[in-house]
Image 1 (cartoon, rainbow, N blue to C red):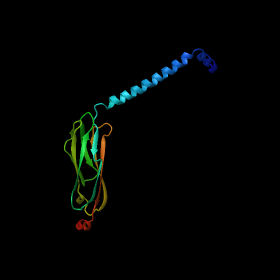
Image 2: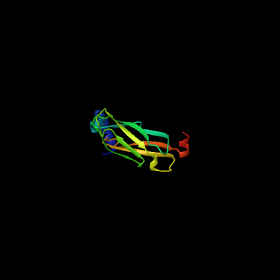
Image 3: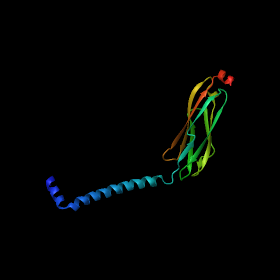
Image 4: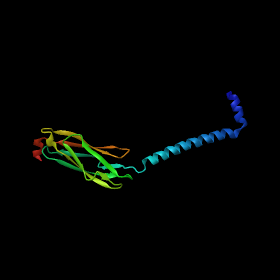
Length: 159
């Protein structure tokens, strides 16, 4: 069918082009509604992790003393949050949590220690990471960045 013939047919039936436009809009709306419902249903009943503070700067630390920091791990979701594992980027950093299962709306305490004696003689700025693996579907691994500046023995003695 030629384009001019199709145009002539539509001009003879003005309601038909409006009907096609209407059906197209309804189809697009149905697709968008379906995608929105799928996203909403997929996230119902999910655990959500929030760590506060999100990172920590120990500042200047003595070369012969363990430094500690505390974090709050909160489940802002609607299902229990399971902390499957806690690892660190280096053996000088350790982390323990008060509970590996955190109910919705509840929190657990994460204690992190940094021990500079694991690296004898190492001084200056350092960067470490604590990794929390959980059942949060949007953030299965949470990283907590730690910064510190290990003082030289002479600087530590001046304090």
